Length: 340
Image 1 (cartoon, rainbow, N blue to C red):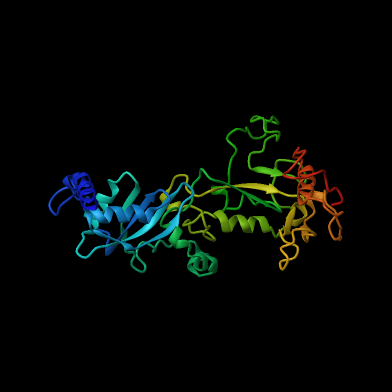
Image 2 (image 1 turned 180 degrees about the vertical axis):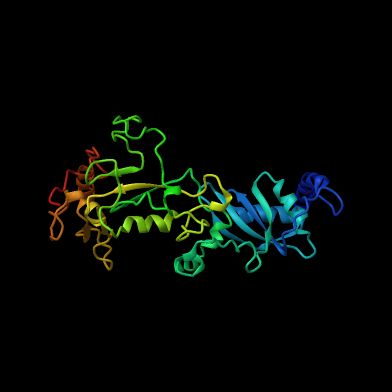
């Protein structure tokens, strides 16, 4: 019984070989980029990517499924697999055959990136040239710049002590609200803020997010994010675009001046665990740390003991109350833990 089944399987799968590329026809278009001759990269759909590849190897040869490995799996269930090639298999022909399978999302050669290749874009901003912006080197920003230097479709809110939106190295990348007509005293876009062309000052409740002091931390942060790059001025932003390329490159900054309190003052941070006694696997009397001021809704700096049998979820309901979220019950909650 085993022999007929094997022959039947080979007879069906062999139909794919009729369209398989050979050395003279049907191959991928020429590609000057170098790639390895020992493996290819494949995106495989399904819960058993190596099993799919093992079946492919049984019928078509070309790959060594046993030595292939899954590198990662995305949220939509596609696994990146480094597929080892069998001896003598042509990478480009194997890629084309793999790409034709119903269970592959994509397939490509494993391209070789030579040291320094493609990573030589150097903006002409003085501080960058003088190596004053050490964080670019530390974070290897030039690797990301090969892919993008920033897009004007992305808005980044700088929540700080203000944003110097008229700074010569920032102004080209500062957002301008297209829904507002500056200075007409009308909330044109209906968002509740009048003439919010560059952002908003939540401290003074007006449309001018400029810093009030001479040393603006927010302007400094904005420069790290999106100072105009390659414009011969100041510093190079992480996503500041390329001034020499023209057009709308670089992300857009939105100034949001805050009320002067710290981020922690306006946060709620819950830290705890699900076991009170690890030796006994006891789920009672759980230690919980609640940090932050919750925008003035919490009273930190205290030790509060809950009554016996109080579910942890009672605390969650109370925190949601302070966030303005209407929730009568969370999980197994039996009420609220309001002494926070």
